[in-house]
Every structure is written in structure tokens, then in C-alpha cells.
Image 1 (cartoon, helix red, strand yellow):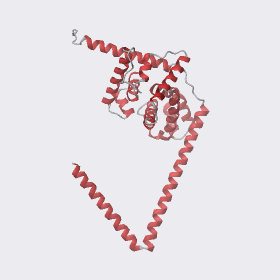
Image 2: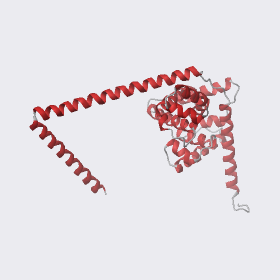
Image 3: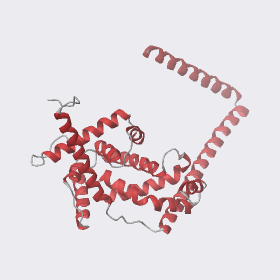
Image 4: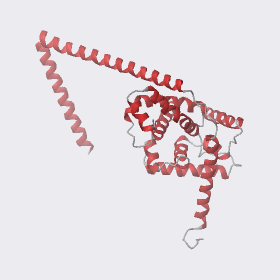
Length: 183
Length: 115
């Protein structure tokens, strides 16, 4: 059964088709969320929330974009909403601790936590997400605009400023890490 | 200082720096991507979907029950006043029409003022 058939039977309520679709896309979804949240726990939590929302909203999927792009779009918006709700109660240290956990996680698997990853983890979400979508996943500015519900020009500007901030961090890492990029 | 194509060496340096930054970011993200992720088994996914479908059904039933209950209450109120208290019924009808008309007029007036 190909993806289109699976989506059609999932729309009819077949739970096995849903399960196959989710199992196939789960690693991609969690890894994407790990990159944008820099937090393995939140990544898994939002991945599960995304799947739950997908079950509820599958009738709205029109097949114009890839199923994976649709999941990415739901996951991104879910993360942004959750982040907005928790913004007041969340302390800055929590973000730092989360990325330190990811760093430890990587180093325990003999993977290097690079300066670029450290700089990326210190970017604000509104800059980090467009940079990752553009330069790692290859989405166009129009597509990023659609995913994040912003204008394509805004997406372009955020990518540019995000890159500038990372570049600055990489260039002057001996200087105290500045005000421009903070979580 | 500009080269033959009219691009300044400063711009070229900046482009190179951007390119290097993007490469460094992608390199780091590749490392993150290469880590193994725990994927639950098929049964876990099936159970998760079944649970979600059950929650949806419950929500749908609850909303439908609330809708029917409200409709029954409103309709019984209307029918009761119409049959037992016809004067009150017509007064209520007139008041509702008047309130709707006043609010619509005020809404239009606000729109005209804001222009």
C-alpha cells in the first residue's frame, strides 16, 4: 500500500493505516522537533501531540503538500502555541538545561556538539525554526511562510538575521555571548 | 574595491562567510539527525490511534448532547410562552427585533465613522 492509499484509508478511520503512516514518519518528526526545540523530552511530547491532532484533522489534509510537510506544519504550530503559553512561567535556565541535556545525549553517543549547534540553540525560536526549515530541509520562503503563518518576506528576514547571529557567534566565540541571541 | 563583475570583495567575503555558516549549521544538524531515535512498535501506534478516536467520539457525543439539550430547552420555552402567555411571547418577539435592529444600526454607524 503506498502513502496515498494509506491516507485514504486513514481518512475512512482505519487505525492500522494511521499506525503505518505514523510509524513511517515518527523518526523524521521527532528529529525535526529535536532540532527546533533543542529538547528531546519536548520533541517526543509534541510528536505524540501532533499524531493525536493528525487523527482529528486528517479530513483536512488535501494532498497538495507531502504528508511529512503537513505533519511538520502541525508540529511547528503546536510547539509555537505551547511555547507561547508557557513563556511567562518558563525560566531562561530551563532552555539552557534542555540544550545541555541534548548535548549530553549526543556526546554519550560519541557525536560532537558543535559550536554551530550551540549557537543555534541560543537563537530565539522565531529565528531558529526558519533557518532550519530553509537551509536544512530546503523549504522555500513561501512554504516557510505558510507553515509559520507569516509573510514570505518576514520568513526571509528571519532567516537572514538568524544566520547573521550564528555567524557572529561563530566568529567571536571568545567574546561574551551577547544580547542579540537569547532563548 | 570591486572585481570585473562589479561585485565588491567585501560582498564576496560576506557570501563566503554565509556559506560557511550554513555548512557549519548543516554539519551540526546532520550529527543530530544521525542519532538513533526510539520508535515504538506498531501496536503502540495502533493503540494510540484507537484511544484518540475514542476521545473524539466521546467529545462528539457530549457536544451533540449539549446541543440537543439546549435546543429542547429553548424550544419548550418558546412553545410554552406562545401557548400559555401569548402577550409575553409577542412582547419578547418585538423586543428581540428591536434589539437586533438597534445593534445593526449602531454597527453600521461605527463602520461609517471609522472611515
